[in-house]
Length: 325
Ligand SMILES: *[C@@H]1O[C@H](CO)[C@@H](O)[C@H](O)[C@H]1NC(C)=O
Ligand SMILES: *[C@@H]1O[C@H](CO)[C@@H](O)[C@H](O)[C@H]1NC(C)=O
Ligand SMILES: *[C@@H]1O[C@H](CO)[C@@H](O)[C@H](O)[C@H]1NC(C)=O
Ligand SMILES: *[C@@H]1O[C@H](CO)[C@@H](O)[C@H](O)[C@H]1NC(C)=O
Ligand SMILES: *[C@@H]1O[C@H](CO)[C@@H](O)[C@H](O)[C@H]1NC(C)=O
Image 1 (cartoon, rainbow, N blue to C red):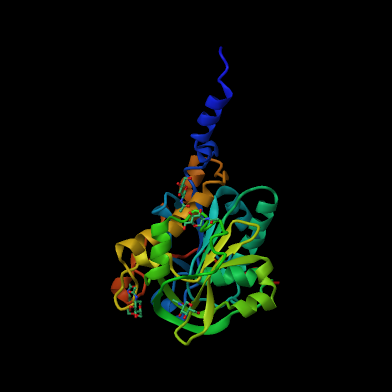
Image 2 (cartoon, rainbow, N blue to C red):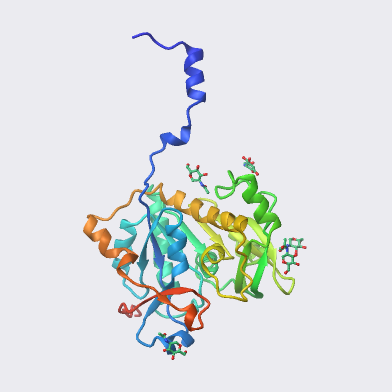
């Protein structure tokens, strides 16, 4: 067999798409953390112990992933076991106190610790936090200290103010021009939060050593808040706004932008996160086990018909185990 000449070899190499060399998991499964019901919701659904808004499930599915609910109020073994089987975790938005017993923040803290260990051990395991999930990421990285500042961003639809170094990141290093243009110029991000993380907090708690700040915004009272963070070491990402709402939440008078270019930009975040989860090769021990965990075992309720801001919600009645003492 004749050897290829060096110049020809170089041409072949330079035409070769290096990304196709990387083996990917094209059947990624994302664990989505449930949360306790608000007092108001509990009045309507007194027999339920936790819920996940269906838009987070759809967000994952729309990018080629499948979802598994992760329940609150379980013991450490439960979280350890489930994390071994899945390829990433999504911490959704919502409204709970981080100090609640056996709730969202407690489960989040166990998950966060275990995922850091996994990454330290060479298992590429991403976390995506949206809104409350973004705040929880920052909170946990500050060793569970309340670092949030009260602010006002209700039904606020705004463009992103990218930081100078936003592009030096995994999230935006390869951002297409059209997506960047949409995010920078259109009212593309849907904000619903009364807590914010500020630049001075990042400095005070040395969170700048842990996170890159990729964008900032101004709330309805003129307070500057951080809108996107990316972990410096691990594949952890947080957005203060709600990309899933643009695509999947249609309750009126919430000022959510559904323009087609904004839908594409929102999908960019989901596609990025699911891409990250494709680099993880955890799996369930059998197909039957996988089937038993998937969200397809549950049915969402059409809640917008009954005064909810969410079109559909998955309610769960899983037992809450009291882990205190
Ligand atoms: C920055 O963004 C542009 C597109 O806006 C992209 O072409 C470029 O590769 C990005 N990355 C860096 C590190 O500059
Ligand atoms: C974004 O929203 C603001 C406030 O509602 C409005 O003044 C502005 O024109 C909007 N911008 C775009 C590009 O739609
Ligand atoms: C972007 O930053 C500028 C300068 O601080 C500010 O005036 C503007 O309100 C910000 N835009 C948004 C949408 O937060
Ligand atoms: C996801 O990965 C594919 C294949 O590597 C790439 O073409 C695409 O741009 C990625 N999408 C995002 C949003 O990162
Ligand atoms: C719908 O809302 C009403 C009023 O809050 C409540 O009484 C009823 O139980 C709800 N129905 C369902 C199916 O949740």
